[in-house]
Length: 171
Image (cartoon, rainbow, N blue to C red):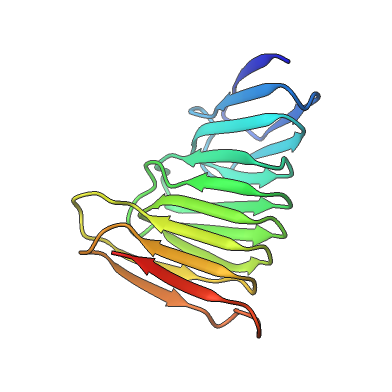
């Protein structure tokens, strides 16, 4: 098992893990907005400062977003993925698609997951700011947990399939 660090350039980047025991840390500070970070293979993969889009097939990977110029992030995953809001802003949109199960933490931006068929678990940020957050669900089970009493969370569950559960909680 090894710990591997990868620092991206500003164009499309593909990182493929070769051994399950490896830890791969991707620093994507230079990745330009609207360029794609593709994560594949195996290992424990964590990408930080992602301003661009993400295509993931690594089970259990984690991606932390960074503020970008157009306020739009496209994330597609075929495996379980944690998306950390990071410095994405109130009013930005994180579009989720694919078959992977998503966990979104520290949410300040909006989530559009109508193209996602895996489960969706969202926790909003607990900060001192008051945000209005929109969560558009996919067709599978969804949990939305509010992190702060002053926030307004609007959930659009039009795509939620019959016999699937929408769970709302938090402060």
